[in-house]
Length: 70
Image 1 (cartoon, helix red, strand yellow):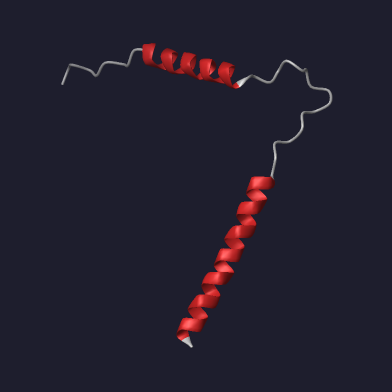
Image 2 (tube, rainbow, N blue to C red; image 1 turned 90 degrees about the vertical axis):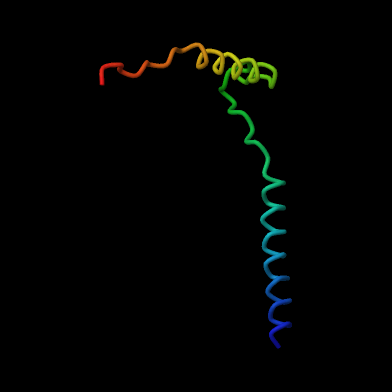
């Protein structure tokens, strides 16, 4: 009896996970708004360059030095 309950529980959980995974995979990106400017979306290359610039800017910012007077 315990084994049957375990198997049934696993099948139910697997079905739930399968349904959720299917929903997640079929959910697409929302279509662009009709009034939006066409050039506002960045290409992946532009996104990578923007991220690299942000990281380089963060790396160039000097850290505050701790107080030497203790």
